[in-house]
Amino acid sequence: MTFTVAAFYKFVPLPDFKSHQPVLAETLSAAGVKGTVLIASEGVNGTIAGTADAVDTALAALRALPGCAALEPKYSRTDEMPFLRLKVRLKREIVTMGVPGTDPNALVGTYVAPDAWNALITDSDTVLIDTRNAYETAIGTFEGAIDPNTQSFREFPEWFRAFREKLEAEGRKPKVAMFCTGGIRCEKATSFVKSEGLDEVFHLEGGILKYLETVPEQDSKWRGECFVFDERVSVRHDLTPGSYDLCHACKRPLSDADRAHAAYEPGVSCHHCIGEMSDAQRARFAERQKQIDLARARGEQHMGPEARRSEEA
Image 1 (cartoon, rainbow, N blue to C red):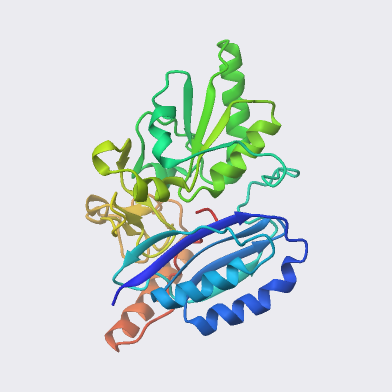
Image 2: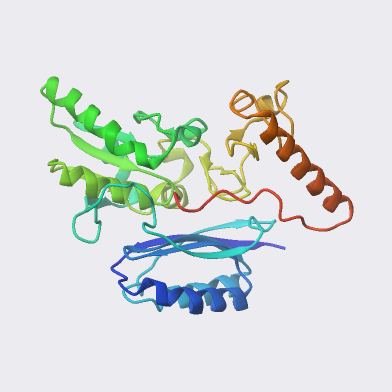
């Protein structure tokens, strides 16, 4: 069976966002989709999966939210359901930056369509910044992109302020282009960067996923695979599931070589996190993995390790 995966977000003022959560949760549940939807006063964000009809029904409910009629998802396909359950959550931010006053509904950079992205990022006057986390950039990014090596999006403002000081010390005032998986983080990042006083700020409309969907692979400036926030872990340029697995202890992507490492124990640890976990944590993870294996042997689905949050997609 083939499932449709739809990743979406929309920055839009939703002052009564809490009132929408119960109805939206009921409608999406009845449609039969799974995944995560986040609602906040600044908008909506999520990734869902199901049959094509179920996803269409869910998207119609999402587009019925005030100001969301133009919500445009990025689609992909998979042969396995990438989520274990449906969650519709209330949040302070639909993507957490933690800088009060940052509002893409009021101030945002210039959107650049995927088919115009190559021309911008190959311009010598452009600085290209990957706004994603280090575990994401490690498996793929755009040619020539700067990696801030952040562990969460909350670290981006501090990194950027230091980076801007470096540019100013060098007497440089380049165009700044930013990108992320689905467009939400780079859109919020442009709002922050423009509020810091930069003028020529651009971001990839629809994110990496829309670029991979739009730009032919032979013309692509993308290198590697793209990390996604569900059980597929990564996708290739054609948006089919990639070659990476997930460490369900630390949630980092793992290659075949990583899984061959002596520190790798399914569900318990990998070489990235074995020194970060306490004995108590490893024991808890081992018991969780045991229950997953037992459920699998019975032909049942254990709720087990949840898919990664779609919050930062």
